[in-house]
Length: 35
Image (tube, rainbow, N blue to C red):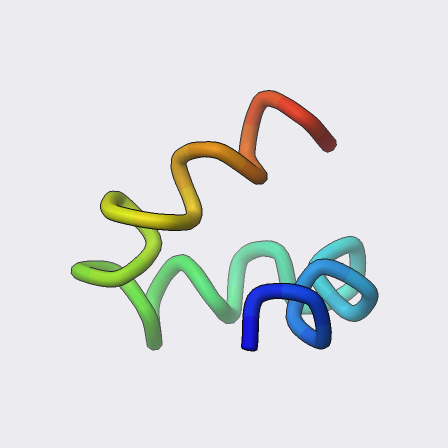
């Protein structure tokens, strides 16, 4: 799931933050600094 989101993360970077707020902190934390 993160692989697909990572691609659109640039455009939906803020959108994912609001939608996947709880998941974003768990697994998204790794993708945040990476991007």
